Length: 221
Image 1 (cartoon, rainbow, N blue to C red):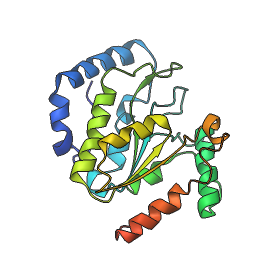
Image 2 (image 1 turned 60 degrees about the horizontal axis):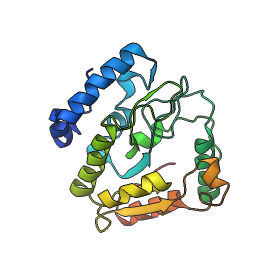
Image 3 (image 1 turned 90 degrees about the vertical axis):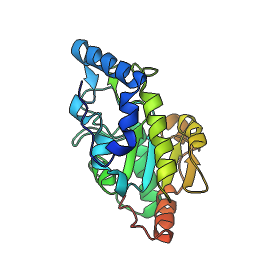
Image 4 (image 1 turned 120 degrees about the vertical axis):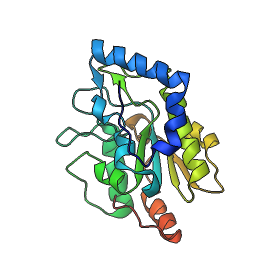
């Protein structure tokens, strides 16, 4: 399997692609995509990187697993393709933006515009078998995406990391909080949000406040 990666990322990740674990991962993906329905499409696996170039990166949002229903996943965490019904977590993300920033609830569930403004929408695992949540976990993706977080932490400055839920919060150990701004809260899923762990976090306004103080352009959420 050949995965196309934007040139801005290649100098930083080329060593990972040569490591045995990543070669094993590619072999696994070849077999999976040949014998099963998997998401996202092969050409969209690296969408988070190909739409958010390394030099433009300002914000990182960490998800866990791609959506595993037909037509949903397109390589950006929490995002769905145009015209697809908004999953519950995305609904709660949009509700928080409405409360936080006073913006109207959007029609489209695609977060591509965020990505193109410098928001890396990074799932810890970048692929999944249809209708089988977590089916590609423990195959090497987490090793790769942990390294991505470390590289961003070490080579960039003034990046906002948004850690939503217990899984994402564990990634804080990979981030130098003296160089970057780390915001943590509950997961936007209804299970967490309905228990009071999501709404009112104001992460979107706090992110933009920090970016402006760092002389960076705020995100149009």
